[in-house]
Image (cartoon, rainbow over all chains, first blue to last red; front, side):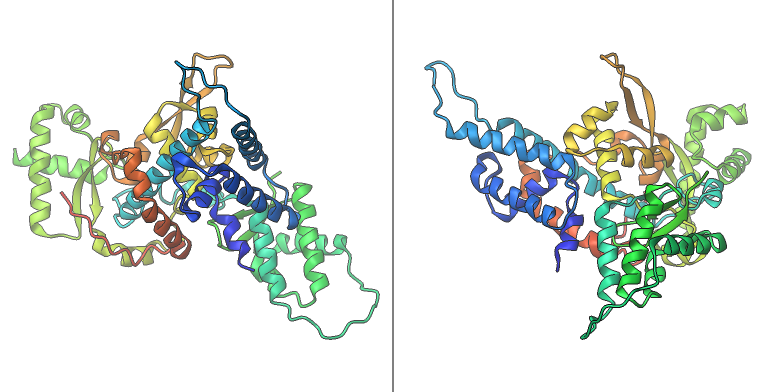
Length: 240
Length: 203
């Protein structure tokens, strides 16, 4: 079940493609398009099998790959003076450009790391500010479906499987769990996703809680945020 | 002259943003930019020689006192929970694109990244690392973005020219392995500020 990690590694379709190219140790200027397209589509299928909504960007690139593949299968009429353009050309340019920026982003990160070791005198905007005290989730990034699924998987795994089962009516409803979450949020201003779910002992309650959480987010009654990938997810009341 | 030295030192000490020679000359009055620059160099040298816990550094076109990196661990204890997070991968990619291609529209950013960059752009704007530079004279008059002085300060750069040069594409492809390693590192590093081994030479 290592796929949860993988999902988070890719920043987008180009990132995934570069990964496949690197993994297959193929020349970026001579991409074996059939092979890469196959692997790419397998990944998309895999996402589908998880019932994840596939981001539109991934589909666009899938379509591009298939168009290139089709073009390469067709015979090309070569004019004597003109050289036929490689159908892969544009995609390769995009990939190289993305790779360049990805590389640059790692250098910026190195600078960031270095600079974070030095503290300037006085108030600095990049550090703690009044704005943050008022709104301490100020810098949290939006949580993606992947992050939520990952967090959900983590808590559900903590529940050891019962070796018996019998059917009985369970006295829990999503509405009830929604109320509970909201009540909790009345007492404190944020709830840790892990803390909240760890305290639940039955799988069905965990599932209902998760559904309740999604429902509340959907209704914009609560918000969820996360400081960094793999960090705990925080649950907040949405601002009016 | 000695008096000017103390004056400048006091000004930089009290300022909440890096002070430029120009600003100092403006405030002090009977001092020109060049002289101010000379005196600052002297102060810089003195602090270095005195071997104090902090230094006078040039950043974002001005001067400010910053602590020596050796003390980051202990200062982090003081600042615990009050520091802003490191930037996410998405935000760093977006920031790199803007830094190297500014001014740039969102459409161009999305095109290179292959994904929607609305979220990271908002984060960067909120953190004042980028700002809106105006609108492009193109259909729809899209907004264009550029980096700010806070961006320079955030990365400890004096000017945008100090950004690491982007290598030739061939070089980058050879460096793939390095990026891969960094990626793995990234997963394990999380937010830990301590344990940075690299020691930068102060100048």
